[in-house]
Picture 1: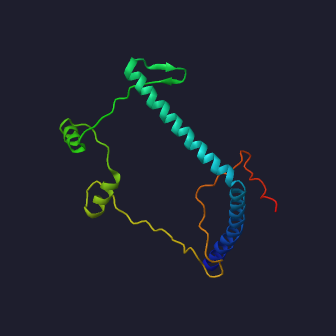
Picture 2: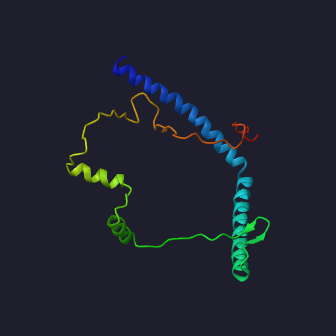
Picture 3: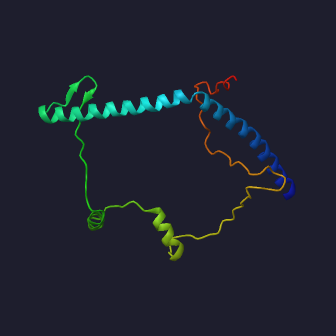
Length: 165
């Protein structure tokens, strides 16, 4: 296959993807428009649940502090969680003094290794081909490929038909 043939194959694949992607987007928009009141009601109900749960949590903590009882009702109990607060610099100094293995900060190390020659690091150049998001003959503007599939609103994987006019 020649380079020009490969480019044309990419243009054709992108054109086909664009057509299908537009159809899917129209279906999603039609579904969201048709079910907008239900989606708004769901959001309001979710907010109401969170507020009710937070009120119950605050009441449970108050009752625990007053009675010392952790088992307050079926499905309502209190647990004590140990939390830590410390200066990270003090913790690092202590860990180094006690010869604890520390996790490597890979991002910071990579930045350092790019500007400092380290005898235990192997350096090499890797070639990487990049493709233009648009080729002549391709519909414009191009739609980027979706990395993760969008879930459909129904468990059977099928969106309902658009609302009838």
